[in-house]
Amino acid sequence: MRIVIALLPLALSGCIARTAVDIVTLPVKAVGAGFDAVTTSQSEADEKRGRAIRKQEEREGREARKREKEERRRMRDDDGYDPYR
Image 1 (tube, one colour):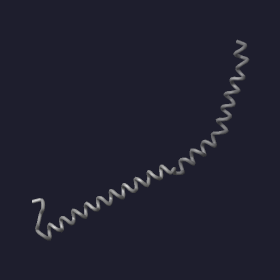
Image 2 (cartoon, rainbow, N blue to C red):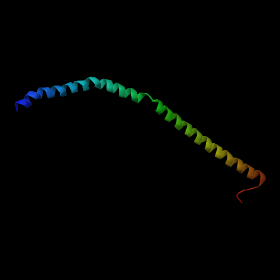
Image 3 (tube, one colour):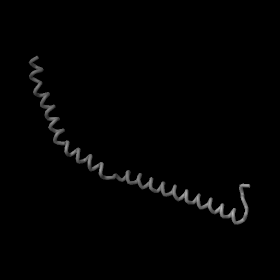
Image 4 (cartoon, rainbow, N blue to C red):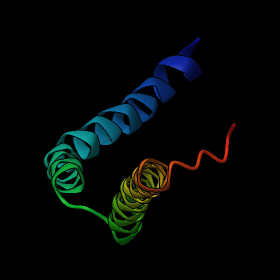
């Protein structure tokens, strides 16, 4: 029992030292997390740009299909020809 009591201050000093390190490093970790939340990494920027490009291509594809459909309708109305009949 005396050995446990003798070792108790050593064990507690480790806990106290660890707690002190945690308290000292907490502001640094908090600032780092805030900085990471505010900034954009290169991979995140690349993903965002890729999404924007895909959306633009989808929009252009829809517009092209709409123009083709309109052109077919115009040709059918002008010639009286309906390729679907």
